Length: 318
Ligand code: PMT
Image (cartoon, rainbow, N blue to C red; front, side, top):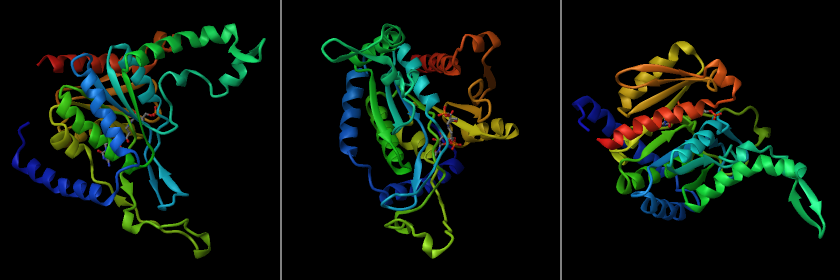
């Protein structure tokens, strides 16, 4: 990738910031195990299936080291979980980096109370699914078993912003090294603000001290090193969430110009289930569910993934 003098300067400035972030925030528990799993997953799939990293859910920013309170980023994880299923149906191997306890592929189709309602006792004291519920679960179970038997999904979880960023960097670097034509599909909602370790309280903040004033510091924009340093050859798709329609295309275009990745998918909080806008260097195009698709309960992620897969296939060719 060729960069002008100004962009090189701004990247080297932000490199200091992101390196400092990692120096100050320790790796999550189990980090070495996650790295080993990533290596093994990439090695198995690199010559077998296209690989995608899907990030999903919101990051938390703790107020205390022994965390009682935190601020959260909005995201249920529906976009990431649904998209993962569609990537799998297109033959991809997916690294699903998601917020712990957020929406997950396959299970998302079942109500949490489902199990207790669906089970019935049979002779011998065993429990089994009723025939109606069996019919409902069967296709989901089959899809899941197929993916599992082919080891085509790697589940990685995060809770805090720091967990997420460590795992995002590790995954990107691993893909760059092992599968440089891989796709990054960054649907997670990532905090722009945090409390540095040295400014964070050790124990639960006490209300007896009166009203609480908290200063949140800016998180370095990690898309910058991600695109230019960790994974310069990967196909990078980021999402941009806004609430003001007038700002969406402007902010998505700005993100693309700044980080120079492949595609930004803009969405509005209010309409994100029905429409998104694809923004590239050359064009911006609206993708919207049609009335008959809404009636058939087609998910917008099906259309998004079809379009992303087609663009990624083109990218792989060259
Ligand atoms: O999960 P759902 O409820 O279904 O909702 C899906 C969604 C609306 C969350 C999803 O479609 C979406 O828009 N995700 C991105 C939301 C977001 O956080 O946008 P942002 O403006 O904060 O970030 C834009 C990009 O900058 C992201 O690719 C992010 O990874 C990146 N970023 C953000 C913060 C940061 N410190 N560094 C970054 O590089």
